[in-house]
Length: 410
Image (tube, rainbow, N blue to C red; front, side, top):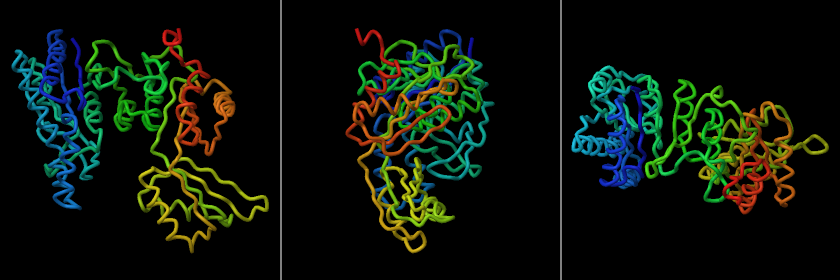
């Protein structure tokens, strides 16, 4: 007998028929003698509708009431799944975040979990009752409803698995695992049996949409074994585990990409101490995250061009912030472009193998693809290229690193 946490995303509980299918999946684990906590998202599209209604009601809604509204989607799903389980003979009870309680800070809309008291739920699961928990939500010390941010149900599930001392946290979604790259673009992409926390964290942060970044961070910190698998096919998915569980480490495990990047160049800046702080300080104060950074100093050493990336949604605001600080920074001009994409090659094997970056650069050069910005970490090399080269670059790199599935190539 094991303790399990199962999380079902919006597409898995999109309508009542799918909720009934989920109930059968949960029943299978209960019949095997396991203690089960189920975490559910809102039915597909529900949260977007709730957000739209809130925005229509008031342009700047009270964050506390905003959370009350948008958290209600998960409450509906939790109640329906509990009813579906009871209908097939499985004892079940729904739990809201405040009922557990799952305590958070007071940052409404993006709250962080501080403590989970699982005493009552543990008693219920020990007597064979399935706890169906509304994901994405918690409560402050003052018992006000909070939400964890979009994709927060993954975080709810991993946090509950850590508190529940679960053997595994199964994340059911509309894909059957983690792939070497996006199979919609690269037909030869293959599903990974296992991937390390660090690799999954890099892939999630670099654009892969399979798992939410905060949930991977939490899984890594608490060593929660996570399995990503499909609600629609009955086969094992991808295990996200500690590096020690993977005996033969690939040099490169996957290639991620992000279309949500924009490039800004602040040209002709006087090269003097404090110039970087003068550019990036105001951006930070405005809540704009900067990612890749490259500095090019002129031959005479008097001027420099500073190129960096921000989220595509922030490009207009970032340019305005820089223009407002022109007297302080003293630059010649600002150039911006949203027609770029970031491609990242990721793998823990990079730590012990040289030449990964060189192979990336040569492969792109051979295809006539110009690299605009480069950034690296211990297990990642990322480049910024023109958006029109995305598919060509992904396919070329996927083949160059030997990631193509053999059966697809035959």
